[in-house]
Image (cartoon, rainbow, N blue to C red):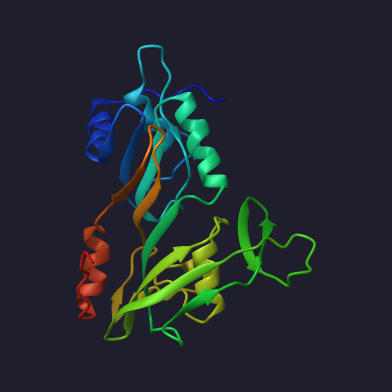
Length: 244
């Protein structure tokens, strides 16, 4: 494990501003687009690096329970203790986490509500990793299920709610591209980089909500409102994002 990068006062203030829920067992943050969850290259600090700001007196920092793509914004969860990490990891493996995302695409899919169930496989190209759709009998095929529904349609754009039933890398991005509706700003998988004549600066995918069993008992639901750039792209198309 690499040694923790030293944090500046600005780093500490930044990570504290991302916290949307905190208790003795877990901490949830609203990750901004452009911040890697972990595994960053060089000296760029990742969210995992920044969690040192919440380290206990014994030096143990919270552990991320899952990851979000670097350009995806929204709810991400960390466990404060080793038992909590184990509990939540098992819950994740048992598909007891319910994830809800928002995405902006160039047009509503047909049908406007449904599920994509095409298997995926990992494809390494140099230092980059991609996911590809594949036949179920492919040697590297992984089951992947993504449910979607259209929430609103605007000028040259649609707002979708996405609920992945499995947790494959880039799953939602690849599944939407497969049905001809790649996410706006997703250069890797064919998403348009402009909308209504204006540039789309990043992947328009936001992790809106996370529902999961809490290590101390009961269910917990945590939500994060989409960032301003996401709202601005939607608003330009006449789409108003509601909290329903």
